[in-house]
Image (tube, rainbow, N blue to C red; front, side, top):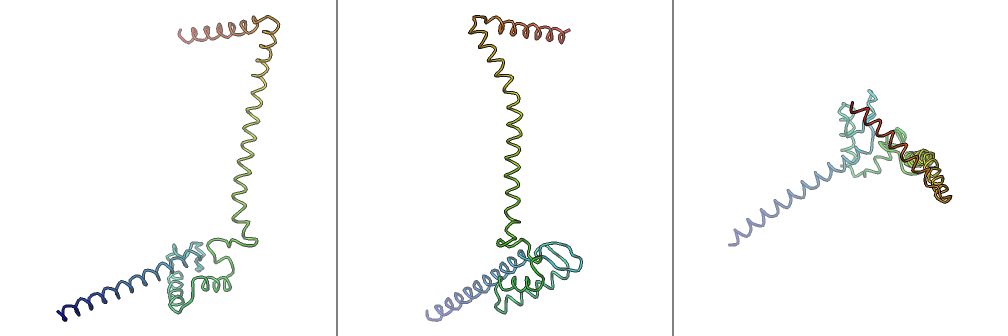
Length: 173
């Protein structure tokens, strides 16, 4: 019974150790991926790709270098800061969200909003140009009905009815 309990304990600790090692390896891979997503590739080809998407030999060298840096205890932010000091802010895959770079985040949304407002005003202007003609006809009709002469709207209506009938007859023949 004691031997059986020892075997179970050994198996339990081996499985626990393997689980911890695998999770730390997976975690290290996720941290490296996070770092690669934040930085651009600085290869000789000037491919302009984010490091995680680049397949050149320079990107592979950088991955190995970053893996060693992470294993030495540096954090992602520290490595990114080192790269900014070495290459400038062009190494970042996205502009920082502070200072003048904030405009790179705000301007596109502002432009979309201003464009939407402009389009709305333009469309409203087109619609407003058509409304006065309709309202003018209604006003003329109201004036005619007030003066006791609803005949003008009836005349207009019968005129259009005749024209519609003539057009339909022409289409049928």
